[in-house]
Length: 57
Length: 398
Image (cartoon, rainbow over all chains, first blue to last red):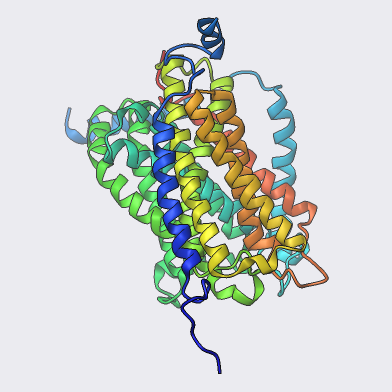
């Protein structure tokens, strides 16, 4: 006869809960990341990253 | 002049105008024409044999492999790639993000043509194509069948997109009163269209729920409708980026209402949406991977094939989109969109053809006739698209 055990992470779907929590944390990080601008990114309106390189120099 | 006389003269004016517009324009001897015309002609000959002598005469389909690339690529993949229409109309007409207004017409046109040609390709694959009318006229209704829902939705969505695009046709035919009336229908049509799209994009996935023993467990899941729906969003967005890139090169003399900066902003916005949706899709795949203990299945060829699809063509393009948005790299977005599209094509073909009856020794491979007809459908759609955009006000004018 098989017993249900609370310490088995698969039976209590613990791994799935952990994955869900990590998704929520990562999702917030992703949205924040996408809303920001990278260090070397060209200013909106600039044609290409060449301008950003020139600005850096 | 009485009303009848006015209507008659207006009708004859539109008729003469359409006849005039049907005449070909531009050069005939282009690389695209040289390749596409023989393929279309060959496809028509093959279709003659298909309808006269049956499916078996030109395809490798049989009782064990009823779904070939006509369904797997044309219908299932084509409909996913047409998802851009409902996403963009939702963003513009419901969310009121005017930034994307300049691409609405071309996206809706692409969606409409994709449904007409790719969903229309369904008739090629039916053993008795004249039965396609059955779900509509009420002959042998299958109320409980997912196919009943999908067939009705395809029909209604094609009509809805035709309504969404109709103001462009009225503008082209210089029917100002008709255009004003049709424009008033747009918002209602958009909301109806979004509802239909969500249901039939997932419905296409639900079609495969009954094939549980035949689809490899790495691709089969009871959540396949949700996966199909979520992936159709980023498929549509990637397709808009891809088509936009080609259109900007091929039809550069027609495009010019928005400057380069505005175009970049649109591409960046689409890439942002694609990155977020791909991340959600990847999470669903990861959750299913854990829930169904799929790690037991990834040590053989099918496992590597699955990892190629999920990591190589979902996670990597997702990261590329995110990085490119952050650093405003338009070129990288274009590469990521191609990878994402390949991922969608591979996923849909895996579910319908490649991982279908994966245990069989004698596998299905498409015949050359099937490939030619598939190319014919794609080329014909491009021909019609080109005819429309060179005549109707689809792109913003300079």
